[in-house]
Length: 271
Image 1 (tube, rainbow, N blue to C red):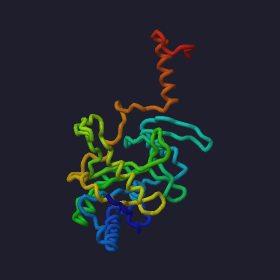
Image 2: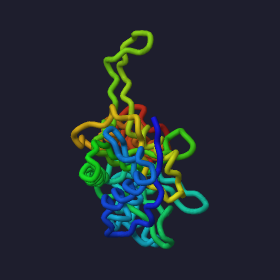
Image 3: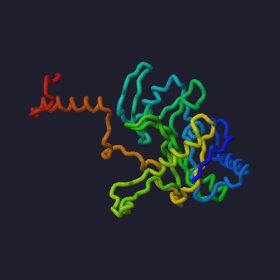
Image 4: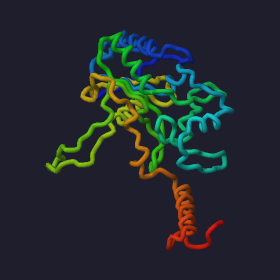
């Protein structure tokens, strides 16, 4: 497998035709090195920030907290620290992340970026443009950076997808000892997004990476997109932060005491 990030895109602004800009970038890269021309099975991984910029998803930094609130569907955890308050929330795309994905990095001073309106649709548009320009069957991922529970540091994950099998279901196959796999479903789109970030970097001005060698994950149809990667609702075993879960449990226990449930919420019951 190989990956590279073409240079020369330049600053993307609201209203720009992003698919056309990316086709021009790929043409220029192929002119420098013909071996880099888009080919069947390539996966293009695009940083969400340039999608947001092209879509005009830019708001004034003074409105950041209101923007986070507007993008929030559910609050998971809130923690105060000396510089302010961190909110971990589920946003309207079903992603659970800090500040609903509202970000102040790699954007002009005094502004912040919201996540794209529909990253899957953005990925489909780029895929069509590249296919029309190069006649190549490629996959496209839109990536964003996020932290993870119980792990330090951040990594890139997929928030939009077209033409890529985002999950590789290995259930029913066998391990190296012949035992059947019953639980393993690999998040291959997230793995590709993280690999692409190694060549894109955070501050290099190279928001697009081409990953070659994962053609077995590229499919004919656009597919269901990245939304199938989110685990919220009934399957979410960690729907609340520890303090929030404790508070909710205490409140439920107090309600049980008032209703006469034996052993509920020991100690004084708030009125």
